[in-house]
Image (cartoon, rainbow, N blue to C red; front, side, top):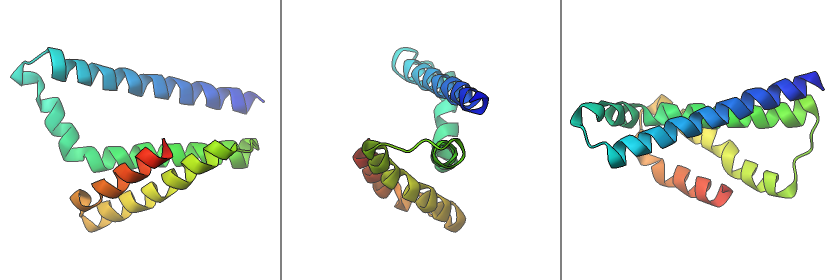
Length: 116
């Protein structure tokens, strides 16, 4: 049970950290209209495919960790979300490999909306 509690802490802190970063970026873009801060946006745009791949990969590995290592059976809604999450890792990985990131955004967005 100690492994389960540690995993929950790590995933919880990571999730909250990412939410704080996203809110800070939104705040910067909406309320602070200083041009010198827009370098953040250009970095994100330039690396968005890698950011998305990392997020989906961590979510997939976390899902496998809880179900296969900890032994928690996912609920029906979790299975629906997972069926939309797992293909995203493959699609994003292929897009990175083939350097065709702009061609897959519609697919990723569609899977994300359905999975949510």
